[in-house]
Every structure is written in C-alpha cells, then in structure tokens.
Amino acid sequence: MSHSHAHAEANEENTYFLDQLCTIAVCGLLGFTAIGLYLKGWLTAKFGLIERFHVPVFAGGITLLVLVVLRSLAIWRMAGQARAAHTHSEEKPVPKKEEHSHGHEHSHDHEHSHGHEHSHSHGHEHAHASSHGHEHAPKHNHSHGDDAHDHGWAPWQYAILIIPAVLYFLELPRDGYNMTRLDADLKDVELDPGTASKRIAFASAAGSMVLPAFKKTGQLNLKFSELSRVAATQRSRERLEGYTVVLEGHFRMIPGKDKEFQLFRVMVNCCGTDSITLKSRIVAPEALQGYAYMDWVKIEGELSFQKVGGKDEWMPVITLPSMANIQKVPPPADPNKDV
Image (cartoon, rainbow, N blue to C red; front, top):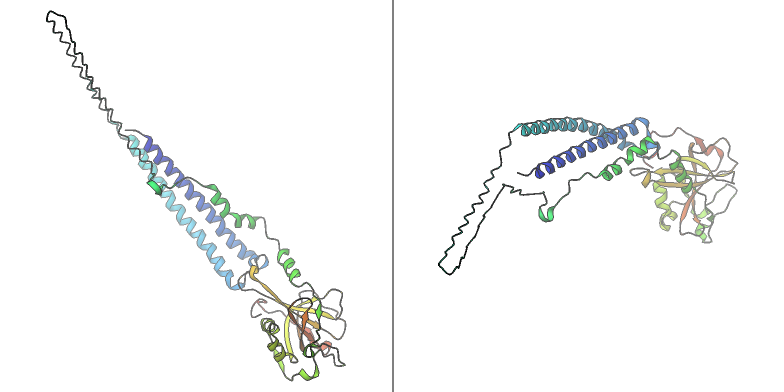
C-alpha cells in the first residue's frame, strides 16, 4: 500500500501543531499587553479609555493567560498521544505483497501440417500478466470537491494579531498624541457679535454682554454638554441668555489676549477616538495671572452667545463681573464623567 497518504497526514498534523503553538504565543502576548496597559496606566494616558472599561481590559488579559496555560497543556498531551501512535504504527510488521502475476502463457503452437504446409501457428501467447501488485492507492487528498480547504500555515495572520503587542513594547502611541489633537480642537476662532437686536454684544459699565432687556435673575449650574445643546438652537439660546451660570472645567489662555480664556471639558463615550471637546469663552474684567494650561477652575458669570465668524455656529460666552468669580478648585476624580 502506498505511503503517500501517510506522509500527507503527517504533514497536516505537523501544520496543525505549528498553528496551535503560534496561536498560543499570540494570545499570551495579547494577554500580557492588556495587563501591562492597565498596570502602567496607559489605558487613559495613551488611549483615553474611560475608567469603567479599565477593569474589563485587565480581566480580559488575565483570562487570556489562563486560557493559554490550559491550551498549552492540552496541546502537549495531544502531541504525546500522536508520538505514541506513530511509534506503534512503525513497530507493526508490514505484510508481503502478493505477487500473483499469473502470466500463464498457454502458447499452443500446434502446427497442423496437412501436406500443404499451412502451418497456422496460433501462437497466441495470452500472457494475462495481471501482475496486480495491490497498489490500489485510493489517493484521497482531502480535497472534498468545492469544499477543498487548505490547512496550510499562514504566518501573515499572526503578524496582524501581534500589532497591539508590538505597539505596547515600542510605547506607542506617544503621550503627546492626545494633547496634539486637543490643541487642534481648542484652536481659537474669531467671533462675530452679529447685527440682530437680540444678539448685539456690547460692554456696559457693569461688564455685561447681554442686552438689559434679556437679563434674567437666577443662577444655573450647567454641564458643558447642556451648554453645547443650548447653543445649537436659537430658541434655546434666547431661553438661557442672560442667566448667571456656574461652570467648571480646564483653563486655557487665548493667545494674544490677556483678559480672555477658554474653559473646556473633553467628553469621552468609550475611548479617546470618539472624544468631543466642549468649550466656552470666558471674559474677565482684568488681566489674568497665576493660571496655567489645564488648571481646573470654577467660574460664575453672565451667559450670552456669539456667532462664530464665517460659520453657522454659536459659542457660549460668559462674562465675569469681578475677578472673585474665578478660582482654582480640585479636579474631580474622573474629569471625563458627567461632562
């Protein structure tokens, strides 16, 4: 019997074990990477992942390492069984081939010499020589018609899977990546006070930027997300303009101006990729001193809205009646929560 099928099975078995070992190695690397990102605090610093997802990432890394150990033991056991099976098959005696090549040559050479020599020598040597050396060799090469599937080893698959681990060991992305994006989001824009009677911004003696007719009594504690929604529609702007609002956020001085700064927060739904920067412009009565970029400050002032020059957008502008209405405060435990 031909040994071609045996060799094919052996090759396929070797490929299977190689594939399993590579999968185990990749899973181990990914598990190690997940745990490392959590322990080093890079989930927030480098990827801006919100805190509620930190523990699931850490738990996922531990789970992967546990599965790696269990699968390694299973493959080690399977490899031992395969070796034992091969050893047993090699020790079996190989039966001799039946060579019944019955080449029976009945060569009847009967010469009928009937006087007129017509020797029709039938010489039909029917050498049946069927010599069937029993090489039936079914040759089933696992090609099941249209379902032929290749069990070959594909290293490119593992090259893709280890990309997160490679980035981790290279300490990529750099910490400055998120700050670069934030600076772009906070780029200063020119504001157009507008010409509509309800949107004329002017500085009165009290420092108000709201027409006296639209001033409202009362104080509102607003979130940045609420302020952003209000600025989107005219009806909402008219409803809240003139109120005194209280707002907390990061401080950023507007370049080239000593009395104006931005107050902003970053809203993250899942990770840094889907983050949204929400901002408001604050106008102080005096030049600002003693404040640095990213300081956490609390302000209290009068709310108005101004149109962004060249765009159909409105920005909230808050005017501080005095310097006492701005102060540094401790940042919250999670600055990206309840924005």
